[in-house]
Image (cartoon, rainbow, N blue to C red):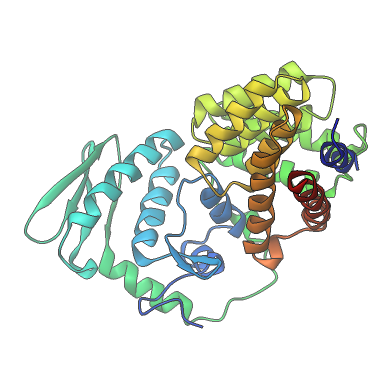
Length: 341
């Protein structure tokens, strides 16, 4: 076993962005009365991601706001996440071909179709039972109005978040998140751990298509001896949301733990094909590659991991992530030394 591999295993044990106005996560959350955690989750899963960049930071454009508006309306109407995702993909395919200014655009439903109108032509975006009708000029006015108002602190935005199809299931999911945040990450019999398990189980019982709840439930079970049950949870998450990178990463991690390095490598690479910036996939893939002697490739992915951590906003770099980055930097030095010999 080489020194870099041993070190990584040891660590595992222990200004204006542009001329067009761009919007931050906090501003988007205010505009649509969403918790910031959900806006970030939509971005992390590739559901709706900010499309503008300024250096290492990413911002939402007005076209991104259109997608968020559509998604919120459809999810509030009770449509499954997968159908909403398909609707957004089709809608995005039409918007770039519309020549009219955004102020002239209207997006509305006509029975089972999403229609895009630019004043002269009407485009059918997709199919599905939709109840949606909003004027983009009004949306622009709403953006201007909300962003000029002072934001009143003191309320937990997650507590007033609308549901992803089922209010009670989303509330159970939020309660699970709150309990998990209080858990020490070690004690399996801790009340917080058991409470988080119970809340996530309640969430998926109330809404069996709730992919994020399945993933979080599986992640907790992976700490226990119930590995097969954890794997089933991740599989269920992917049945509800086939593109969810967290569930894909977790399945690859289970393969890595069980010694199936080929399966783990394939799983992590599949995540990176869909999301090249997924830092946990770079980290996991590097570990799997070290197991099979792929030092050069492992080094490249560890460097990508460190780069992605650096690009995160400071508020998202928690103590555990910083600790892992420092340890990975040590492994990178060892690998460079070995490869230079």
